[in-house]
Image (cartoon, rainbow over all chains, first blue to last red; front, side, top):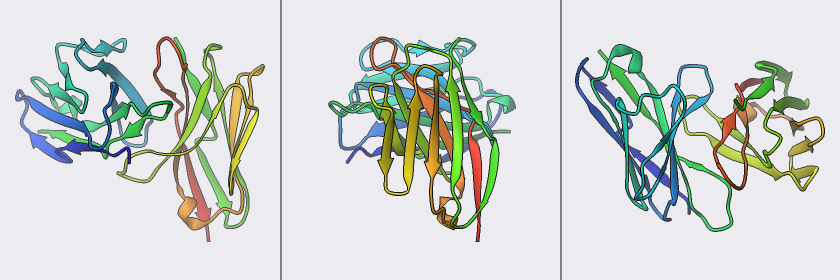
Length: 116
Length: 113
């Protein structure tokens, strides 16, 4: 149990376009989902926390108009990178929290975004 | 803001030896401390966690110790094997209130056969 999927696993897009990444909890309902960004050989940087049906809480320095997060249901959260630029190229990972009594976050496999 | 320092950044050990990774956190309200293992290009996987009401926890070759007074916690891996080679991240979190992980900077562990 506690499987989180992400789609797509990798994507290449051109500068100026938008890209949507999906994060799904497959076998449990995720009350809270998190979006992280990870640069090569670096740690996971929390971008935002999203709760189903409410606005996401963004970390300091993360542009909410650029990284749009929608947590439409208890099993799906989406991250849309708008007007992407090469510096947005990164590994984006989501995680989900939701199993009763569990504090563990379950991570998705990540999405590698390359902006050309 | 809250931060978690992690040392060392890289660690090489001979197979069979022990490895120790240390983390120090700044938020005194943190009370949950997970450790994750991440292989190249893969998702982080929880390997062990500890809550603040416990000083030590062990799971086979892996153990975590917590010193709340000093605000640091450590990961101990005994009898290391080549498959233990990966990047390890510690994290600190509050259980109530604002729940989110603050990750350490990571330790790249190499186990030499």
